[in-house]
Image (cartoon, rainbow, N blue to C red):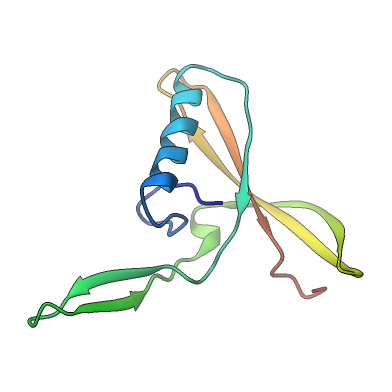
Length: 114
């Protein structure tokens, strides 16, 4: 559900997301033919800091998806609870040390049809 790929992309919240990203990078380094698929979240992540009293403060982590991901032109749809939901994918490539790339596809439902 979450993959840590770049610090500027708030697509993970902790250790499991970092582990997923490390696994994909290792696959790229080892030239393992694989594809990763996850969900695209535009909101829900935040930055944390402590104020002078030691209390936690949260600030929304905002990002421009198109600065990191390439929108794929194809669309598909799924039937969920009797409703058709249109999906698109955004692509990110993890580059391995030897030049091999592993694509990561982020599924997105933020479309006018929905």
